[in-house]
Image 1 (tube, rainbow, N blue to C red):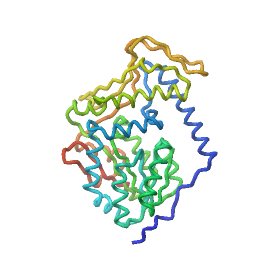
Image 2: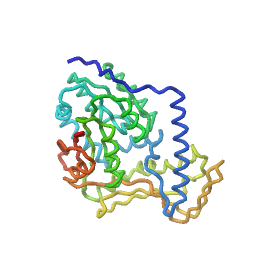
Image 3: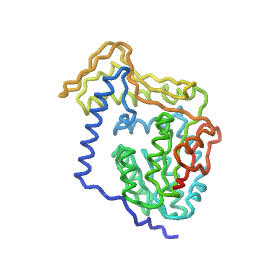
Image 4: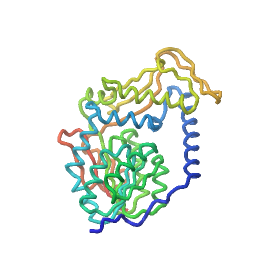
Length: 338
């Protein structure tokens, strides 16, 4: 089979468009911080955790023994990479990787697909341009025959760009436990919007973290070595760097909890004293009382069988579900029926 990638390409954005998106992202960050820290209780969107430094720290988290999703999903992908490729029915396709990060898991599929002489291009999508640059350079060096088309954007605008680019057949990867950052209602809404960018017959491989020992779940979000704490606290450092904030490093601590009834892990930043924080040049100030928190992230967990309900609610047809040997994690392969 011909190893050349499909001819359809993403439109390459020029420097002015990139600069415009960067400026818009800065405005969105300021707006979200201003609104989130004015609320009672305070909260910030988890997407803002992933600047260049946050993405780098998250790569450390993925290597932690306590962070089980990485190893569980890698086991699933290695064991089922042949079946995943066969599900695309031996046709040319674009592999769209939402939240690609360093691509450590998707690389398992990409390398197998290349060895199998599959006809594809790889479109990694991530909000961290630095992470995408590193990933693209690494793949181009190790797999010189692979077409790599990085797309630095958040999910919704990226999906809109993919839809208008009319790529052709697609397999979309939404790996890790990223779907868990949404509530179940939000997850269905997001997956519906994703399906709008897919053509009939396109595939989606989405990861779901399953319920397990609450203590094990909690360790994944509050490891003993403090890497998850650094990840969470980096959000305040980012506000200082980008918005002229004066958060003090010793003013907040990381706190994570797991609620087994709601099946969700929650992360917070907790003020250790009464303090006032300013955003330089904006005139904005925020008062924190002792032990007041900022909610920064949710990670919802699922029970086996629930993925089929989510698929149906979002309008997909569930084709097959892959699970690791310890029943800790699932990757569900869905099709867009059109």
